[in-house]
Amino acid sequence: MSDHSPFDLDNPAAYAVWRKIKLATAPGSLADLIVEVKDPKALTDKERLALLERCACANMAIYAGGNHAEDKEIPRLLGLQLGLKTLDGNYLSDEDGISALTLSGAGTRREFIPYTDRAINWHSDGYYNAPERTVRGMILHCVESAECGGETRLLDHELAYLLLRDENPEFIRALSQPDVMTIPARSAAEGVGEVARPEQAGPVFSVDRQGFLHMRYTARSRSIAWKEDAATRAALACLEQILKRGTPWTFQGRLEAGMGLVCNNVLHERTAFSDSPARRRLIFRARFCERVAAA
Image 1 (cartoon, helix red, strand yellow):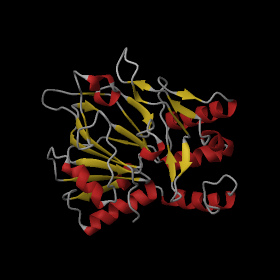
Image 2 (tube, rainbow, N blue to C red):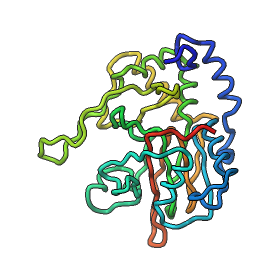
Image 3 (tube, helix red, strand yellow):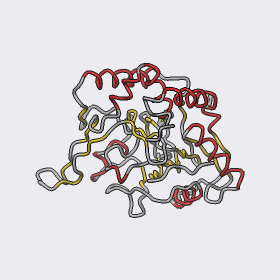
């Protein structure tokens, strides 16, 4: 970590400068994140800059455009224009590395909550990935919204860090331990000894080579093991309260057809939803190894 990093707990002066700027530039409402675009597959210079500027300040932006097609090239080409090139596919995503999140009534996908209509608690994506597959950027593109529900709540992970550090810097130290959060191994199939995904331990907060803060987190209580020490328990309790009570920068809204979220893997959760024969929720999710490019 750089000697000038605001995320260095031994450098309160750099943190104070960063904190002042972060709070001064943080968006005041969900509307501040929205950028109208004509075609996300071919942004104008003005549209592209507006998206990049919002991501630079808030680690996220929402686009609203006229392209309502069921076209997976939308998130792929939009990502390329914003510096997101390397897709992080998984065994549930399609061959192109992009996942079609919709209610699944059969098969393996129905066992995983993104493919159900249930609520999804606070998390960042890819928290079970190995470090070399860290998910830094993400696009959620809405093809069709649900008949009812399916709203998304968002919180810039840097502001979660700020609130925790203001409460007690030792909370950050605890959640930066390299073994503080462990995702157990997952078997390939019931009754088969083969491992589909090995155990993965890691920190909640880390800083990458470019000096950017990354947050690896899930509020789930099953299939996760936290380090058993008093500092970790206190830090997690504080974080859970921040997420539960909300903050001035916790935003909630629903992506409608043609809208999408571009972000640096911020904290997010989804409310439960209900489909109808006329409206079936479909979101294309593209996860990337890169962050959104600098403005």
